[in-house]
Amino acid sequence: MSYSKLLVLLFGLVVLITSSLAEYNEKPKPPTPSPIYKPPAPIKKPSPPIVPKPKPPTPSPIYKPPAPIKKPSPPIVPKPKPPTPSPIYKPPAPIKKPSPPVYNKPSPPLVPKPKPPTLPPRVVRPPPSSPYGKPPSTQPPLVHAPPPTPVTKPLPPPYPKTPTLPPVVKPPTPSYPKYPPPIKAPLPPQKPEGKKPAPPTPYKKPPPYYNPPHKP
Image (cartoon, rainbow, N blue to C red; front, side, top):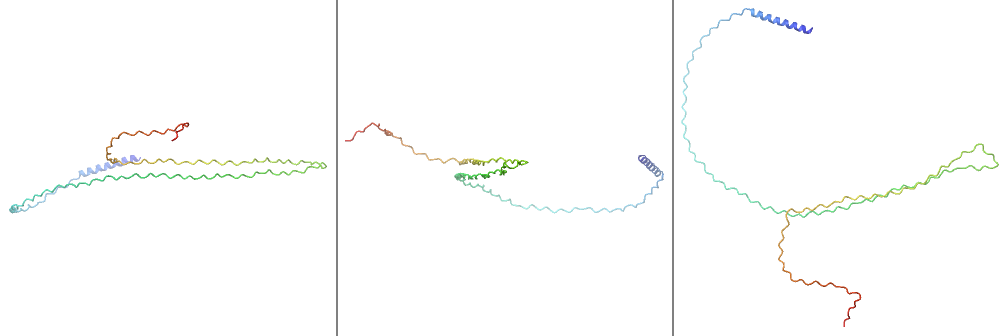
């Protein structure tokens, strides 16, 4: 329903617009007014010609002396650098020996005190019945003594743990200087060796049965 109503309204608007345009075209147009008379513009007098002013004469160029010739500056000679001193030999730092480890003595093991043996409960036995008395009608209940508890021996103390030794620390390798060792002066020429003396004869022990001769 709403769609059909919209179509009807649109159709009505189109009809109204077309009818209004037709009425506007049928109306007679008003006559165009005659042009208004304008008087002619007054004639302007010609302006006098512009005479250009004479330019002043250009002055003669002033003589300028030539610039003085600059002497070339002497070349800058760099100063010689002082020779670098040879590095001072520093002896290697002494190797510190590690301090001996401190061993804590193990505390003695705690040995529990032995408990005193528990004694069996005392049993009160009835007095022996006399042969002249009457036997009891009901026998008394038998009291069973509990078995004696075994005496437990204390456990031996645990073995002490072996102390763990500290890790072995290797000494650091000494650092040697980078520059070569100093050159030693050559040794003087050695003289040619003569004949070597004969080595002394080793002492031999005499046999036990040998008797040396007596001196006169």
